[in-house]
Amino acid sequence: MNFHLNKKNKSLKNSLLETISNFNSFDNAFNTGKRNSVKKVELADKTIIIKSYKTPNLINQFVYKYFRKSKARRSFEYASKLSELDVKTPSQIAYIEYFSLFGLQKSFYISEFIDYDLTYRELTKNPDYPNHENILRQFTKFTWQLHEKGIYFKDHSPGNSLIVKNGENYNFYLVDLNRMSFFELDFESRMKNFSRLTPKKEMVKIMSDEYAKLSGEDFKTVFEKMWLYTEQFQKKFYRKKRLKQKILGRK
Image (cartoon, rainbow, N blue to C red; front, side, top):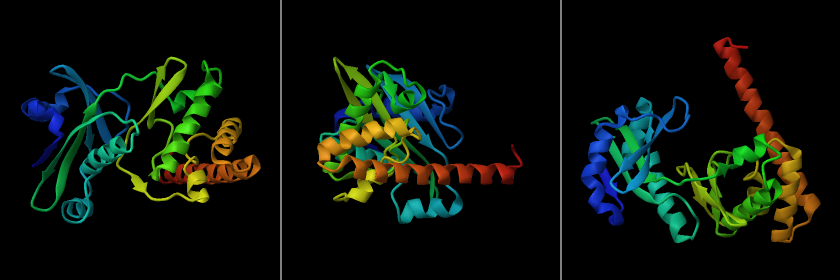
């Protein structure tokens, strides 16, 4: 076992180990599908989130032990880096990895719980959500700030930004952090980073307008490129979905 604990949370070590050993007894906090399990746990004076990653296939077990960092470890380290760059994310507490002789078996990432008001997904589902356009424009500014800091969040998708109302403003917290890159983003990379968020053209237009104002780029240029990458992603997504249904014999 490899147990890495944030120095600020040393007093939680024994409680965390006991909680992990009883992980299966806690209810799933969120609908995360079959791949991973996310649970909300009361621990001492904190409410924490524990994400358990599924056991990798045999090849990846070996890879994650000897050549590549686990998703749990990457999440912890990326959260630390985001904090250094003054980007909000639930405070990282620990990661735990269990290895066999052959490779990684299980891994857990533990962070503090954020009591959020909504995610980007609500904006996509409900165009009448209160203050919809203002939230969308503030989210676009948040994304622009990520880009200016050289952060490319590969899983920039509807459920991975927690939104907390703060008076007339909104705070955004990144979650599901294991896939990130840090480099000086060019225009193409910036536009492609919006591709997973929404298939709705009217929302893309608002984001394009705000991003153009912030970046000094021409609106038409921003919109055409942002919409191009959005359409490409949607076509790929539904093509993959149809193929999976065909293989599984589902309608």
